[in-house]
Length: 390
Image (tube, rainbow, N blue to C red):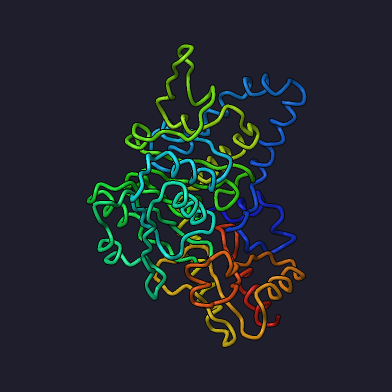
């Protein structure tokens, strides 16, 4: 199937007014997603919040079934969470950590994730073991194997980092985790919605993501996948009358599926909107989406690399829709500001938020252009010309 670009751009009316290369920050939602959110808010206004939620029960069930299609898992393995960072925290803190336990991560780890690891280290006296990425930006799998010890409990990996768009070999890491009996937490915040994710092939125990990025859902929405084993062995750090059942004055039982990680009070309109966003992606086909995004990313990478004043960071053969770069003689913030004046949306990856790689190498802030399937080759040409002129 070839993506109907004309239809997708019609479903994304803002593309006629601006060039949106900030999909890794917050993608433009399809009209149907915005309508789904507004319709439910209007239903709450006319019926009442509880009554509207009851009336929307079928739409809420779609959240789980559509994610199950997206990730090749059971609906019972999906939890609705308000954002990817919270989902990642929920998974991390659900494990019974003991002093001396080791957790392995890469030296490109996302700022919020690494802050959580540092916090856990202070609380539980665990050990954080860093594995370097190679010159191509990929985690060195041989070094990953070499640092595993009897005290290692988990591997935590970011599938596609915010500050560099190379796609990590997540399935290979999953095999390593399985071979060594380790838990595997995968941050798919930047990959869900642009890469065809199969949790069975990835072999992860937990996978988390957000709605607002490549899934094209509302802000303030996210999800958590948990394997059957992870659901059975983990214990959420907090419970309420949705995730647990009060069985007696001094007893309770946890929900038997991934809803044990949810809370009763949720953004119902946002959840319905995210369900519609995932349905839209499933209809287009994730393999089709991944193929188009990869093709556009390679085109942008190649054309930016032809500019003598520009250095592109991505050097692997595994390119996501994120392309990061620097231009000589202009600070990243100034370049982003100049592009914004031309109605070109981009973002900046700041050195201070990448202490393990950008700061360690004194790279400085970098510009980030992130493409989605509704972007075009003509837009890429306009963008490259604008970067050259700024």
